[in-house]
Amino acid sequence: MRILLTNDDGINAPGLAVLEAIAAEIAGPQGEVWTVAPAFEQSGVGHCISYSRPMMIAQLSDRRFAAEGSPADCVLAGLYDVFQGAKPDLVLSGVNRGNNAAENVLYSGTIGGAMEAALQGIPAIALSQFMGRATETLASPFDAAAQHGAALIRSLLDRGIWTNDDYRIFYNVNFPPTPAAGVKGVRVAAQGFRRDSHFSCEPHISPTGRRYLWVKGGPQHGPTLPGTDAAANLEGYISVTPLRADLTAHDLLPDLEARLA
Image (cartoon, rainbow, N blue to C red):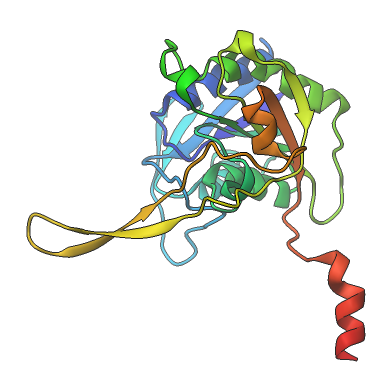
């Protein structure tokens, strides 16, 4: 099996090292693991691509590259430069430091990398590690992802639903903010919504007197509705959410058509 890895925390992120170990276990001794990751952190860029500017790519070692672009850019670079148009068997994006559950899905570069792979017709899984008080005292806060990641991916590859339609299914996996031994199991969960949390802007004055705005995230440990991703994570479960890039509100189409007729 040939696996392509990317992330949004950057080529030197510890979560990427965790993913490389997971992918090596999945690929096996006869497989290949390739990494094309951003040269610098690209958190929050979503599915952005560098359409209006070129990007540099550098080979760091055997099967390991850094690109000056987003995770989606890195997938494109992997497919059309590194692989010269050939397709890998699987794309894995992560392991992100912090959850990509609920509304974070819409901002996440980790999700963006997996989404681009799905749009290119390649099976893809995004993986993220929810952080919390229980992970702060661990030798590695990625313990849950490191210990359960390979088995979860194998389960999805063997028994997951993989479609061949235009907007293919890809998967969003979030590991709970617990040690690996505290993981209670796996739950298939819908994308949730944190009703009391949102991004905002906060002004700051620099030492030179200039006024800048910092984008500020909201609280991450508020529960979402039962049966949704963040709620499952906060209860100690790995959440698995099937996603599509199609943003159409299909349930509203007949009613809207009738209203506008």
